[in-house]
Every structure is written in C-alpha cells, then in structure tokens.
Amino acid sequence: MTINSLAPAFVKLFYNRTGLLKQHVMTFSVKPTSSLVVSGNGSLDKSGGGADSFTNHVDALILLLKVITSHNMTFTHAELWSQPLITDDPLFIYDYSLGVAGTDSAAHVVAEQLVITYRSTNGGLWRFYQMEGTAAVDIVAFPPFSTAYANLSNYFLGADNFVRARDNGSPSSVISLKTKTNDALRRALITG
Image 1 (cartoon, helix red, strand yellow):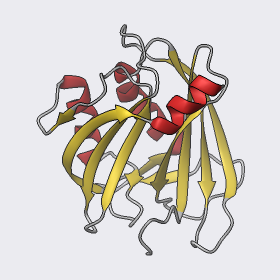
Image 2: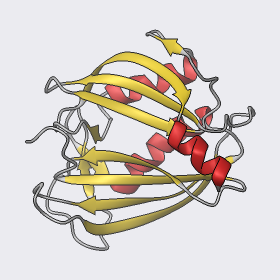
Image 3: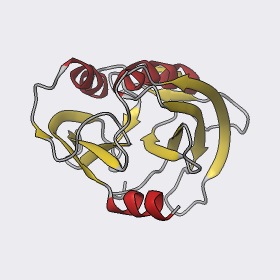
C-alpha cells in the first residue's frame, strides 16, 4: 500500500455552521470487508477485528464528535466511496443523511483548525482534523487530554475504530493535539 492513499475506500463526513455557505469535510480512509456495491450500506472492518455497517460506524463516531462541536455546527451527511486501487477513480457508494447538531454550548472559533496526530500500526502518521471547533487557537497539548478529547482519542485507538491511516494501518498511539488559525479558511471567510 502506498503511503498517502485513500484506497481501498474512504468516508467523507460533511458539517456546516449556521450562516456558512461552504461545508467542511472530514475524510477518512477505511477498509471494507468485501467489495462495495453502489447503493449498499457497506460493511467496514474494525481495527480490533470484526466489522459493522458504514452507518453504524458513522453513528458511533458522531456521538463522540458532537460533544467537541459547537451547537452552531451541524453534521449534515456522510458519504462512502470505493477506490480499490490507488489508480482507480473513486466510485460513490452510499450517502447517509445525518442532521446532527453539535452539543458543546461554546461558540465555534472562526477559522480555527484542530489537529490530533497519531502514529499508525504501519509506522505512518494519521491526523484527525476539525475546522471551527470550540478550542482556542495556539494550543499544544500532549496526552492525557481533557475528557471529551480523551474519549475521541480512545475511540480511534480502540478495537471498534473503523478509520485507517493513509498507509492502511490503524491509529496505534496518540502523539499530540494542536490548534491554529487555518489561514486559507480565514481568507475564505473574510473574502466570502
């Protein structure tokens, strides 16, 4: 498996805040248990063995994400895509409508970018990104994290996790949590 590849499949999770005309998108590599079928709620591997449906995996992740997401933000939908080989064009498989609002009572931080970095079981790095979360900018933290971020990290490191690093390994240890101002997002929001 080539480093930095979304193959053999990936998930896109879309979220938006009230008044923002462009959606944010989280993209995760995943590993299907078998060939994905268009319009099918595909089965995806868990890092500890076994499998579950795409929609059940998304639901489990959303429960953890919504507590670190401002009430001004809504997870609108998730998409499952197949890309068996890195040379293949991605193929749309399934769309899952969500409409789940964040539950953190804090306001979103405009143009803030949260990055949690993990080491993968194959030796690469995997980064979780969230835009316009509720954390202040210019934070650098190392484990252990506060409860909500610790719960999210424990999920990514646990046996039920379905995301893969772009080297097809599972997250195996957490390295750091950092926040900053995303300059491209800041310019887009200022200039419209």
